Image 1 (cartoon, rainbow, N blue to C red):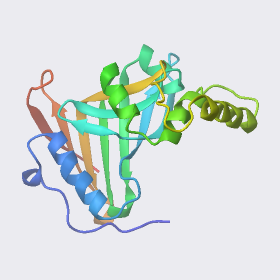
Image 2 (cartoon, rainbow, N blue to C red):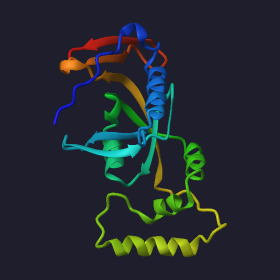
Image 3 (spheres, rainbow, N blue to C red):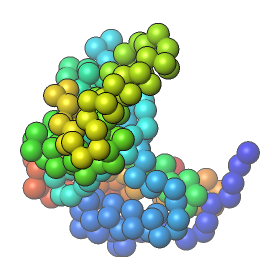
Image 4 (tube, helix red, strand yellow):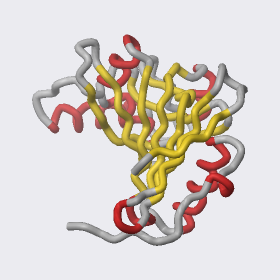
Length: 210
């Protein structure tokens, strides 16, 4: 199973001044191409034993300060990040022959920012955040459904759902961002922004061999 990628590529002269602007351009093109959930990304963390783990989550915001996603703070990814804040994000936009890889550090977002996002979610998702002790072992699906039913009764329609105390966001501040464009004969274009200095400093662009 092998697909030949397109001939047009990615040139240094075509890049935006920083990776966040370049990401915004590519994200808009992925959305315009009709990709299903272009904000889906693979988040990879490492546990205290050094073993990596990956899972797909949804990007819920990005700007020049970083990329934001939300999760249960009792989850495996949260436990990993509490010990080791280094994280990798991968956006696999296969239908358009592109991917973006972000390497950086994650920190929790402000509770007020979490609250704004939480109350923008569909009501069912709000209740689901309460019903699921993410990553914990459960004896059956019935137990999860029963927990959700109890929450439906506790917070009937019209009753506001509070933000769970163990739930919130992470912002990933990028240290490097690689833009990968598939090319013919597996000679892909890989251009990587690398931060020089701290946040707000300049970015260096380097080309990687495919």
